[in-house]
Image (cartoon, rainbow, N blue to C red; front, side, top):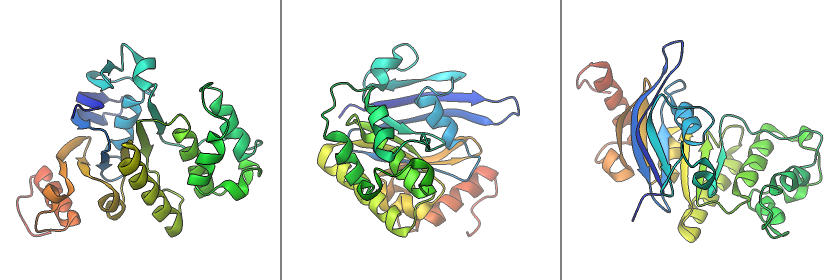
Length: 245
């Protein structure tokens, strides 16, 4: 199966010397691909370059066969994303926020807004102003907006931030259902390894702005836990050898 997202040798360096270097991976239809690493490891920078929110110094991004730098609109036409913040207009209701977002997709059926609100469990609160929403509710609203246009790839930056246990479980179930039933692919960043292990089919471990290992869940764990595998890879990256972790 041809990948719908191809990232090749993507690099970005900021004035403070931080950034990412030589990031390469692929996402195929129905994949749930995770970027895992501590805060500051470069996960959000990678997602911002893929979604066009910042420009790479070098490397390339291909979405659905389109070079994202040269053909941005067709490349992003089948992508939904939440990167960095779950923004909403506080003075508008949740429903009206989505109604405004839906103007970008004139062919959407009128029932689509209510459908995605139901998916993220916001139907009882859809007429309330977003300014009164909790952080978790705003996160759900942003997810609903990302799903409006029935995207084939959804990019989510720390999607479980602000969610309680029930919300995190519902998010995980939604991702797995859309992946299995619709073939929707997801690219997710997180620093919560237990959540990633439950939902992802493949993970790229990041540390210090680089990939230190990448592969399927079974391939990465083997006879060890995913946590121990990651800590072992960090020690290798630091040049600390094979000491127990």
